[in-house]
Image (cartoon, rainbow, N blue to C red; front, side, top):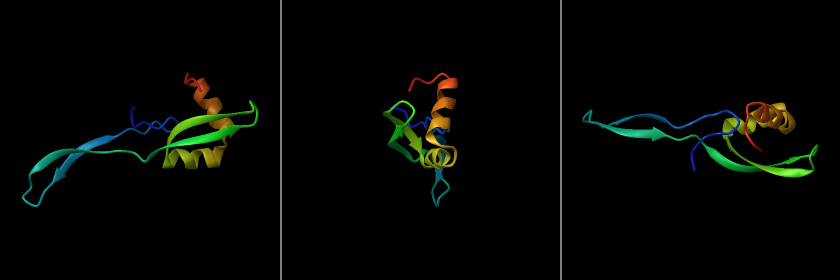
Length: 78
């Protein structure tokens, strides 16, 4: 399962860990992905979304109905 937010599209970013001796090794920063269940009053059902912490804030700001409508316009099946 990929570490990708369904709302914001955030994905892991890649870079290097740099030690004290300046030796570089690969690492990745993963987004704070959480599995959340939201209730859709218009459909009378619950939906499960894989969202990041930023995605949760977007849902709180815009509302779950608007976010689900935008996701469906983009072609995601929910």
